[in-house]
Length: 247
Image (cartoon, rainbow, N blue to C red):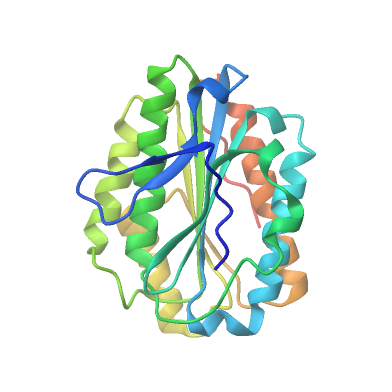
């Protein structure tokens, strides 16, 4: 998979973790407050049939965020996962996210390390939130974990996701955090039950289930994600988080 990081991003390790993350240096941030956004996208072999539509959805999300009145207050990180986790780019300012870069960015193959990806998405968000707080920036966060099935390859147990989300909610680095688990092309009832239970057990704010992954459905998903990002960014400074939107 293409990697869209550049040398301007700091490389950061996470304690007791197999994976770290990268992020914009604090001295390159011009605003006083930010919404930290993470999108973790499943690219296991079963997503091959709709991987190009998923790329288009990601491009639509970035484009919508660029058009938002809050564009200067958004930092976006994109990761893809199969049996391993790959950071496509770390927390970047929207102005540094080029739409053309997202074509051909995803490659389908492998199994599904859902727990590893979710835990990293949460832990990296918390860690960067602490750095922003130390730099006198106000921040909140929203993250999306998009998958089409059950975990079958993680090194970490599901409990580590719950533990990370609990720290995110009770910690003081972020004003608030919204976490959305999204099941796409969920046609197997067992997979649907698994994801619904994972959302409850881990403590995700919201679970959204799509029974299709065609062009129209994934375009609606892009709209849902971009609207959710905008709502959470607008909530920054209110002391609370945005209300879950209906897909």
